[in-house]
Length: 62
Image (cartoon, rainbow, N blue to C red; front, side, top):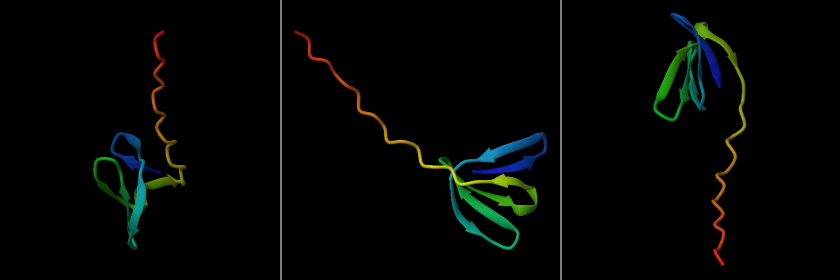
């Protein structure tokens, strides 16, 4: 997760860090790769992966 500045405040990019350069980092989100200039980054941290999906339980009718 990377929190960074945008024109109207702050926003987050939640995903996987896929690369860095001297001046930016790239986060792979659900929808696209987002390249963020490091000068705009406020905070970053590792977030654990989401828990596995639960299977629905069906109750048999008597």
